[in-house]
Structure formats: C-alpha cells, structure tokens
Length: 68
Image 1 (tube, rainbow, N blue to C red):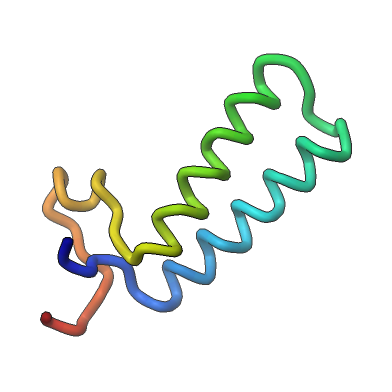
Image 2: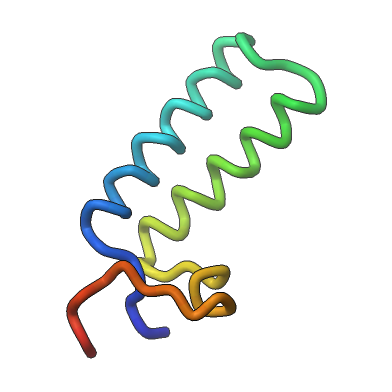
C-alpha cells in the first residue's frame, strides 16, 4: 500500500475518531446513529494508523506529498 494521507490529514482523522468515540461511549449519541458514527470513527482511526485511505485511492486523491 502506498501512503496517500498527509500528516495533517492523519492528525485530523485521529481527532475526529477520538471525538466520535467519546460521544458514543458517553452516550451522547445513541441508537443507530451512535453505531454508525462509531464505525466511521473506527475506520478513520485505522486509516490514520496505516497512512492509507482506500477511498482516496479509488478517487485518485493523495494528500501526501512524499513519493514512495
């Protein structure tokens, strides 16, 4: 997998994932919407960890300026 997420994009994904997790586990967002937001948070967290976003690859987007 080629890296396609920049450092700034990665930090934003971590922050959003943490906020979504906190909202879910504090029962601020519950029910179906809570589960959907939790899944989105997990996906954002994983893509930030591996520096790769499959959706970016499909759309031909890369926020990373470093070529590998």
